[in-house]
Structures are given as C-alpha cells and as structure tokens.
Amino acid sequence: MRPQIVTIFAFTLLILSSGAMLGQSAAKGDKSPPPPDQRTPPDLFLDERLIWLLLAGLVYGAYVAYKRGRFKEILR
Image (cartoon, rainbow, N blue to C red; front, side, top):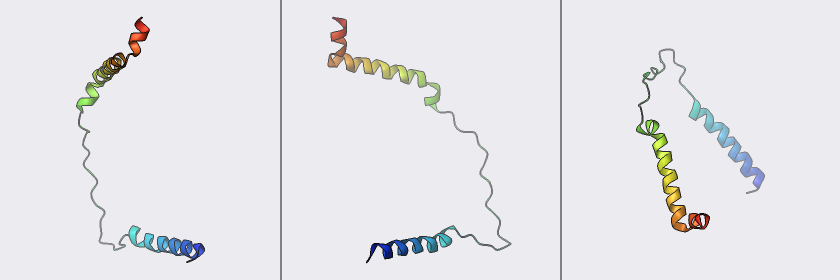
C-alpha cells in the first residue's frame, strides 16, 4: 500500500472509533455516578521523617566516597 493510503486509513479509523469510545448514552433517565467520598489523604511515614532519610543518604554517600578513596586524597 502507498503511504498516503495508509495515513488516510489510519486517520479515518481514528475518527470513527473515537465516537464509539467517547460516546455516552443520551437517555433522560440516566443519572451520573455519585461523586467520590471526600476523604483526607493518609499521613505517610515518609512525610514525617524526610529529614532523617536525607541525612542517612548523605552519610551513606560520604561512606561510599570514603571507600572509593576520594576523601583520602582530600585529607592528606
């Protein structure tokens, strides 16, 4: 097939299928679904202890840098 025919076919298929996928019933008796419950988000452990996580990452980064010898050259 020629590239123009493939492009036109794909565009036509896209246009025709979008109506079926996005269509909604127009009956008057239908009601929309109820709104979701208004709940507060849960308190996450990570939010409260984020500073400790960052400090642990810095300590671990310093440990890895020391083991690789980068701090040994600076301390001499």
